[in-house]
Length: 115
Length: 114
Image 1 (cartoon, rainbow over the protein chains, first blue to last red):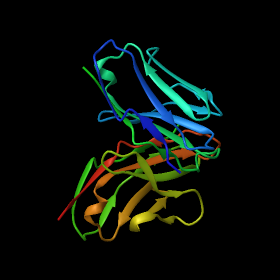
Image 2: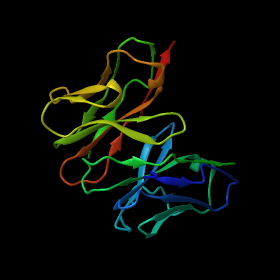
Image 3: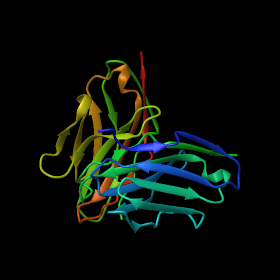
């Protein structure tokens, strides 16, 4: 089991550019979550999917953010256009069963810096 | 909605000393409670969880936590810490009514002093 795989590990981009973050969940996991971690706000849930369908995107900060899950083994989080305040570590996590009592399995994160 | 408060943003502790990391939660319904640990440059991993039953929960790496409903607390403890315990620790809560979302606290950075 390779765990949740995120790419890239680090991304540095200029304000206004499009950024795409990628995630491969653990095989067989039906739930996928995108979190953002900042010093000021801690860990925030942006969006989560169940069986590739977005269930709750109420944490997505604004229309510049979008997330897709075209199949069970791949998800993207896109920011267009990016802004300096988007600088953060973005985590993808997956879960194998329904119910919050099941543990989340996190990737190692993508550290995004927008200059 | 639930919320979690971790009052201590940083806790320095001497090696082999005991440690307690504090967590208080707020919820109008029954909850599940979790502690996750984040080692440098890694994602979070589950340390322990309280779902129901015994209020004292044991986790990995010698950590344990006690659920106190009257004080709405779920403090994490370890009797003797090691250098390898240096990490950030997150308390998290969810309701037990089928809500898939987990709400995290802002984290406590544990630093072990040799």
